[in-house]
Amino acid sequence: VQFKMYHPDKKKQELPVSFEDWEQQARERLADGPYHYIADGAGSGNTAGENRRALDNWRLLPRMMVDTENRDLSIQLLGEHLPFPVLMAPIGVQTIAHEEGELAAARAAKQTGVPYVASTASSFTMERIAEELDDAPKWFQLYWGKDKNVTASFLQRAEEAGYSAIVATLDTQMLSWREKDLENGYLPFLQAEGIANYLSDPAFRAKLERPPEEDIAAAVQQFVEIFTNAALSWEDLAFLRRQTNLPIVLKGVLDPEDVKKALEYDINGFIVSNHGGRQVDGTVAAIDMLPEMVEAAGGRVPVLMDSGIRRGADVIKALALGAEAVLVGRPYIYGLAVDGENGAYEVLRNLLADTDLTMGLTGRARMKDIDRSLVRRQK
Ligand code: FNR
Image (cartoon, rainbow, N blue to C red):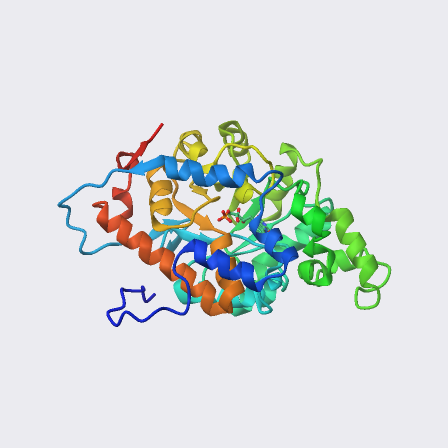
């Protein structure tokens, strides 16, 4: 990855650098429906704000006079060597941001070496996205609905398409209260473009009286019926474990008791997350729960974190509090909205460059040097 450097010619850059400017430019390009769907949180938006306040409340304490000339940001995660402690969070229906959607985002991932986590609700099939990623690192995110045959089929397809881990999202057993989406009457899944993985799935198609090519309305209706499952409970995790040999990472956990419970089911990792503030209004910030979650995992499996990561300092704080890696969501979607593949790539490489600089400037040259001594909580 070519990191952006200061420009000695002092030319004004065409693309933004700051997160706020990317968001602003995306706002100008997107209609109200898609913009609010992407940007807003659940309810009052309090959790989304709290993610930022909490990250800001942890402060870095740099060390001086440490040789950081040669910095190594690479990590080992679930048996894979990754160049950076960063992944692209699973985000559904990316064609609402840019017509090339997930395919453009996947190419940006491939250019950086940052793993791409493909959402169940992608606008392209998991096979098509995997083809675009080629040999680049890729995980598949599972929305785990009511139909066990469809779930089993998705897992099998993900294995065959070359995904190396399954991210099972636990915090979306129902869609939350999202006020602007309700006002705008906007829910992108209710169109064919949000359900590509279902329309192409043999187990899903077997449930339909007529193929979706002939009756898309009935197919969407069937999707709505099975997409979520509020009845899911811990026993169901045993089913998931039996269905795949791939590592299973649970996303959307905040309580250490859930980590302890999940470890009984041979789970391979956790993503501490409140879904970027999009599910429960008023939850704790993901970053604030990280230390306890890491303690509950007891070094047995890796703990990752997302929700609110915007800059290099945020990445370093999460690593210092025990995360093996972080995921970023909205930042790369804004890049995608502004300039497709190039925008998403630009956002990622800037975040990586900022992380690299922050690491060096805080006196850390390797990942293992980033520990709890690097952070202080303000209040
Ligand atoms: C998401 N997220 C998400 N998560 C998931 O497991 N499956 C999905 O399909 C989606 N879809 C989705 C759409 C949009 C528009 C957003 C913004 C988010 C949640 C995502 O993976 C991640 O947890 C958050 O985005 C992280 O917070 P930040 O980085 O956006 O603050």
